[in-house]
Length: 581
Image 1 (tube, helix red, strand yellow):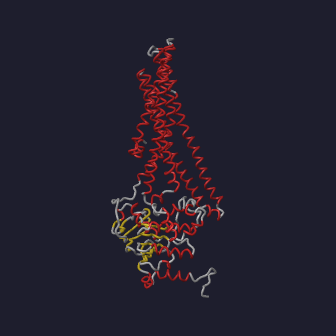
Image 2 (image 1 turned 45 degrees about the horizontal axis):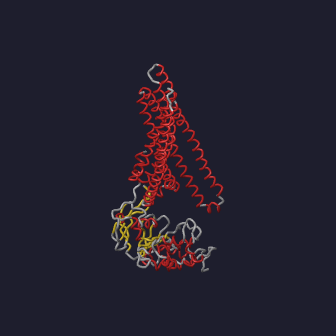
Image 3 (image 1 turned 60 degrees about the vertical axis):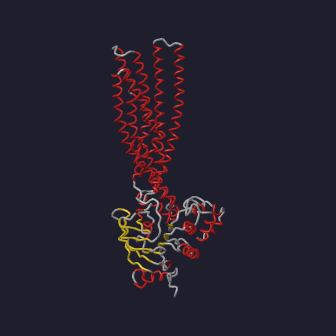
């Protein structure tokens, strides 16, 4: 556990030394009160408690209380302030780390798991360093001081007491195993709940249109019910070791009373020592009982620390050149193979070259590998084998974040932030001026509808941009790309959500945007890519045909048949009758 925390904290652990030290000092200070209590009881038994002693004892107690208030307050505040600062750094680090991972990490883990990792796990880790760990250390320090003190009073009785404490360790370990077992199950269920809730909210329109709201909500209710049952089951299971531990440590005082009385009657123990031992035994028993709470909390939260460490252990995309500059923007695939996961290959031996400033169209049936090629160019993934060169540089050598400075993308599905339209467009180039944003919007033909909104460019769109139509979201995404003005442009069905009138306008804007850029266009409507310098027809992850529109039409192969089929399809009306009839 401590090793995991140490790995997560890194150099930040030094910031926790002072608050932990102060909690230890506070534990030492608390011993003064027990010592004064012992002296007071002895004086009462010996009838030697004088007014002067009362004043001295009271002053010592007051000084001890003031000392503890100062130390405890400072240590308590530092535990939280330093703990929250450290947790902040862990949040930032885990966010930056995950951003540097390939898309495979997101595809292989559910949304619920990712949400748990970025929110609940980090929050629980925060609880470890602000609550559980400091107070566990404080309790252990107090226990150690008391046990050492009892050995100075009577080592035989202290050894017996220590043996009883040792008996409680297997019980704590038993509880720890149960926490690990049921805690993992609870976490998995929690991830399922988040995934089902998000699925329900995102798909509500579909579920409602198919009268599935009740049945799908039952799925959510069943998941919540499973969580409730597991939580109750966990409490039942944990009750046995928890109660057993409490009973064992609570037996310390009766055991000391029994054995101490026997030793006292045999004149092997003085009444003063017996009194001191009883007071310290009561204190030890109380501290051990409270220690269990923080120990259980620490082990429960340990799952969060382990999950964070697991996320940090996943290696980001490697690179050797941090600050590079590309002088040209030709793109070459050399014997590229790719698999999203072992045994499921998507691309086979892909070879092509796109000259700088040229337009390459990627076409083919769904699942052929078109979007995969675009993702590989942007280095959202790394090829399984083979090389991809941009400007003569192997992209596996290049910093992925810096590489993306050279690439603009417009996806088929574009997500907008829950922010103003201005800031959503500004993502393309954060330092852009207002006038530059407006010009980009005009070029993307979205200025007109933005101006009609209540707050214009300052209108806040809903999460995901759902308050706008698909075509409006698409045009804002194109405005981003126009504003960024990167030398490499990836267009994935960028006009798919537009009506014919807007499509014509956007195509004109894209023609302006594509000038002197290396462009990759993914399209299903073949009439939109006939002007491309190079057309790559993909089928089952392989390049079936490659060439210009005219060359491919002359070959009369698969591309020729696709073009003819789409031309024939446009001649049919909604009744299935030819327009020529």
